[in-house]
Image 1 (cartoon, rainbow, N blue to C red):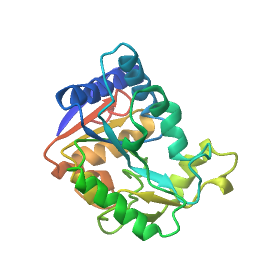
Image 2: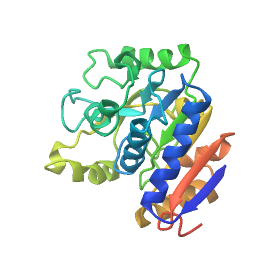
Image 3: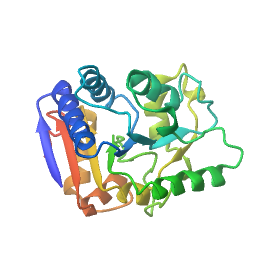
Length: 241
């Protein structure tokens, strides 16, 4: 596990974007696992700039998103499909057929999740998985529990996650209570993992992830067992390290 503590959010965004860009340069048809939330926005902005400067070419890249809210249409402004297109996908030369985001409106959720998981495997697995981290230690929507969950599935969201995500909605009642998420095992099967965290509210969680015991009550702590993990934190998120 490589841990980098950088000065601020801007430096975090630049460094994480450079790692993603390097992955694409090394393997033009890289399979990228992508994350949503406020933390990756700066990184996506940096990647768009690298693309506009002809430094990165996304034409052969395939993406798989970590998660999607259950019950939201892709066109909904709060869906992660909408988020990804707004913050990255609409601004780069990725092919539409290479974009994979869980279907929050699938009639048969179990079948849809199985197909999503199988497609990742058929393409040879994820080369680089980007992760954010929740204040309760969740990665994707793998919430604290008494066991490590496995593969892509429908999950119930923790009340802490619902409260944290309510800032993106008009009211707490509008926040979905379920989501489709890659499982812990799906994430751990990625060849490389990049986790980014910003802000003092993530400091305790980052400490527990890196220094604490491996426990499903802090889902991100399982990353200690992965062979190739890079964690980038700004000074505030890394203040306890």
